[in-house]
Image (tube, rainbow, N blue to C red; front, side):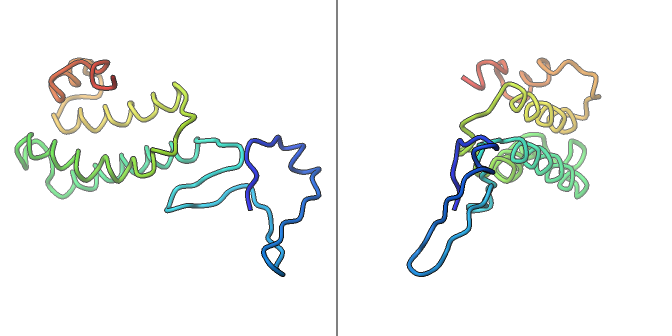
Length: 144
């Protein structure tokens, strides 16, 4: 059992007991639903860190197998990235309803790193230039 939006002091001082038939159900601070971690305070830090890690690891493991600019055509790499890497990293993102600008920046930073690697660009290359080349429009237009 999980009670959401409750402060830590309220949680620690509560003396609730939950019953399901004759069984007592324990209260918890988090649970995993379909592979997505849900916490009582609705924090997304662990989910965003996990998504960034999956995005980076999935892309670079594919890149080590030949999915890079000198191994495949760039359109093919882009399609693989959009159909394999992004869905794996963003699984369950529909539940991320309390995202902050910091969370979005973390995801964008890893995404830009992968896109720059796809195009064999150095990490210091201007990211707006890379974004327009990859998506055909500005980054602001992509998210709107």
